[in-house]
Length: 246
Image: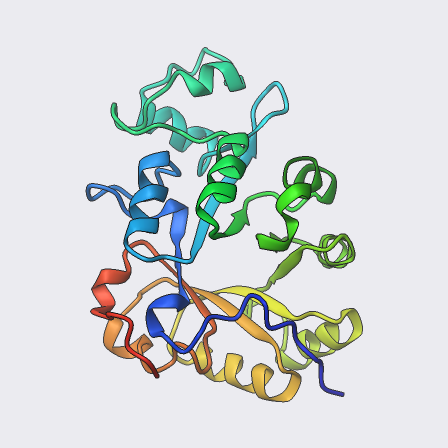
């Protein structure tokens, strides 16, 4: 049984369009800032996909940060102060970058028309509370098959977060067939993992968004657009790609 995949989120034939700006992308040598400046910089550099980490504040507002601990560290925010949305908006990342609330992100997406990739939360109620108006331009990393199915039914494009180290290929394949999984998001720990991706892709037609722990440009360039549909990177410039077709 082969699956028929939606094509709306597949990049064109340009290699440069396969990159996801991880955590908003690099800005002034800093990564994972999830900041306004990082997103704008990535859009100027030609990214079509922007990934942002999203977490709830203590007053249940969705904001962009890699973790509470990381945000306190990069803003010098005291541990004793509860992180509310109001306090969040008053901070500056590394003393100069503006942190993003998800309301800011939605407004920016409507203006600049990029594909938003979410991370850290996949609760369908929370996702739809913020993104119902732009759901056709949002890819959600889903952390359970239940969230995946629900989000897909709501009109989003979820990506099932899947580790090759926890399940066999055939178990993953069966799960994808059973639940009509179109996209998988995974971490690539070693080049050999590409073989597993290739098998699942060819047998079941699944698309892959991959985060490589060691993004060797020479190694991964030959996989982009073939075995790997999308690749999370901090800085696509290390691949030395300038809209080259494959």
